[in-house]
Image 1 (cartoon, rainbow, N blue to C red):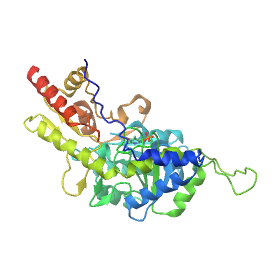
Image 2 (image 1 turned 120 degrees about the vertical axis):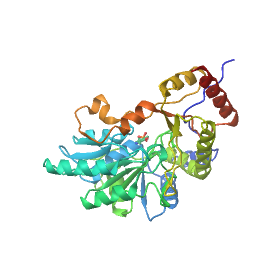
Image 3 (image 1 turned 135 degrees about the vertical axis):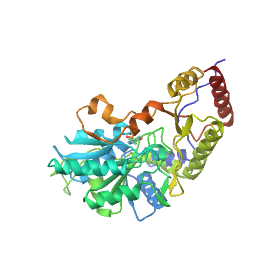
Image 4 (image 1 turned 180 degrees about the vertical axis):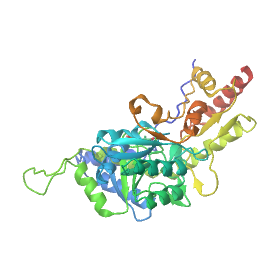
Length: 378
Ligand SMILES: *Cc1c(COP(=O)(O)O)cnc(C)c1O
């Protein structure tokens, strides 16, 4: 019999979700407001600390779109964005008719390189257009160099949108990711550390930003008995059912962080004798990663990440290449890029390993055996 698939990162129900869903059904609160939404937002606000306010959304992508709207990004504007990330970080820039300007990565965290960021800002200003905002990403759960990025942003008076979709539970200098930007966003997609099946969050320290985000995300209804509209609205709120899943998930978030961090330890032991394999690891104690995914690069002309990926796929073990830098993606072909080859090198040699909080000891054994078998064939 064929071995069952070992997934990269699959949804992990805790068993606590059903009671919140049943409550919503019993009260027939099957819409985009209700107890679960308020409860989930409270849970997230308490978890993140720093006095933040959270508006729950139907996806991380819609939350990024809203963050750009709240910062006044419109047609013809430029927005700086980390190149090495998932396309959803930058697509909302295009929704608004604005243009992404991509910035490369530094090798310690794989995230936005502060030097390249400053070079980009200076050059865009010299060319006559000051960017409207910066989107920085904590890739695979690893915090970006927030002090350096925030300092540069402040010098040039640019707001930072913190894409914390992959980094709920990570911290930078003891402060939770998701509270480090002017506006931050979270994702609760099915493959993230906790899920609502589909969902997101918009985080701000200003209660008025939360209020306005909810207003615009709920069709921008002016106060009037008839439906009166003076602004463009969106249908971006989370549902009361999805938020119920989130309430059950956040109860186990700390356990899931520990489990994902244990996966990282498992891989660092498995690969400890392989000099050509380098795991993406916290550079120092300022950085605490939830290790949403354990990722690595392989620098050997025979033992390549693609050869390993194909070998493992054959044994029903899912791995995935690192995100392809967005400045190399056809849809963003016409956009400018500032930076060196770091992001491209990581893409060419990188691999994401199975990293779910539901990864079993038996599955880890299968991964160990498969890797040993591969190593001995190449
Ligand atoms: C998942 C993800 C998003 C988008 O979140 P969705 O909830 O899937 O819309 C944005 N940015 C990054 C870096 C992500 O990993």
